[in-house]
Image 1 (cartoon, helix red, strand yellow):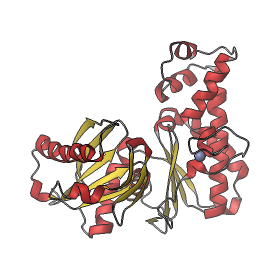
Image 2 (cartoon, rainbow, N blue to C red):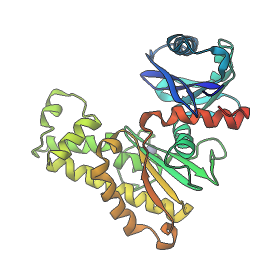
Image 3 (cartoon, rainbow, N blue to C red):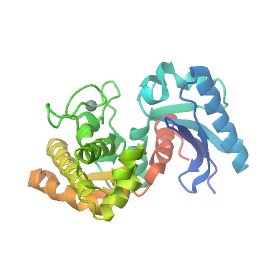
Image 4 (tube, rainbow, N blue to C red):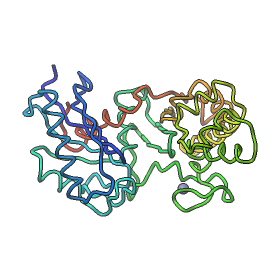
Length: 324
Ligand SMILES: [Zn+2]
């Protein structure tokens, strides 16, 4: 039994996932609490404090063994100060979540971007253990990236490094959520693929996904994967095109940074990895410089949605010097 643990929390747009975790036993306990997207900052902090209480209560874990609370946030955050400068999905802006939550709980609070935390989790507890320079890419609603350089997370000058989803693919491409045209995620995320499929169906192409378009039901990754596995030609074509874009962007970034590992994950990729990975690799090999890919592995993250929770352990060691 490890003598210490942390409470690692993943703050999603619709739910907060809380866990007690340490490096030896892994996830000891977890709770999931829905979040009210229209709540005030103080109500949001109250709900986080309740997650901390709930995860301790449900596990019966000795609170004295907990050394920190870590928060993974989808947005731009400064882990040194604890300020969220912008988290659009959570409705938070210029808010010091670290100070606000620390006033409510008796543990030090640490924060980090959720994708950076996932990269740290993969690097230290997942397939990335041996990697020195690693890129992790999560293909789902959008496309997120985390960068490990010389075995450490690379945050950039103003904590925005790793925004791979907004790397430009084609300046005349579709409009992206960020306001620009032709970003990587505007071509290759699940959202982009589904939008293309919907347009195909509306223009008269036959697809097993037609009923979803008619009823307006959301086409999630699982449904998309089922259509591909059923041989749906529209879905296969559009997911295949997404793989070509992913492969070419990964090759381009490998030519620039010279990684020794790329780890792929995210909702859409995890559901479709048997279909997507070989296709991504073909385009990747077409565009990468041989010398840049000499020692490179392309791997699949096996930590799934828990990668960011594991990353909290690394954050605790980095900022508090405590191994848990
Ligand atoms: Zn963009």
